[in-house]
Structure formats: structure tokens, C-alpha cells
Length: 110
Image 1: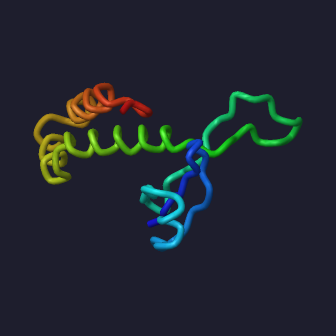
Image 2: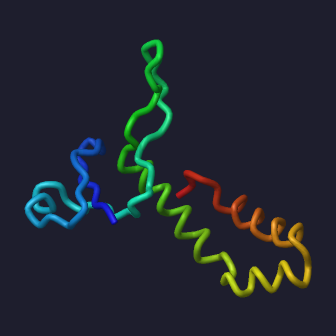
């Protein structure tokens, strides 16, 4: 788990591995994300030659990511039910069911 603290502008100030009470006083409402959550995204600005064209996501972009993840997770059948679906109906039927959920809640949707 990592905790993200944002400036009022929405730009990331700092991230920590533990919830920090002092930081939380200054930077209200930190966001908790998994350790493997990627806070980087493609930048619209031109990059220097040979340099990656990435920037840190803003608070609103991260909140949108979390929202679509939560919505998808709530709709996905349990792993047991998904495996049962694959066994009885085949992998293509399972893919169709999962794609419908992904299409309903695309990445970046709130």
C-alpha cells in the first residue's frame, strides 16, 4: 500500500509507504493505492529526444482510475463463478461477459 498526498492544485506532493498524520494535516485526504499502481501517464508535452514522455497523474486522474476499478470489481463474478462459466460455456463466452463489464466501465471513467 502507498499513500499519495496532493497539493491544492491537484499535483502530487509526496507518496509514502505508511499513513503519515503530519502530512495528512497539511495535505488533506490522501489517497491509498496498491504498491503496483502506476502513477505515471503519457504527457501531452513534447519530450526531449531520447527522454520518456511521461508525467505524474493528477489527483482527479487517480480518482477516476480508482472509480472505474471499484465499479469493475463490484460487477465481476467471483473467480469460482468465472471458472464455472469457462468450464460450461467456454473461454469465448467468458471473454464476452468480462468485456461487457470493461466496456461499461472503461479506464479513466468516473
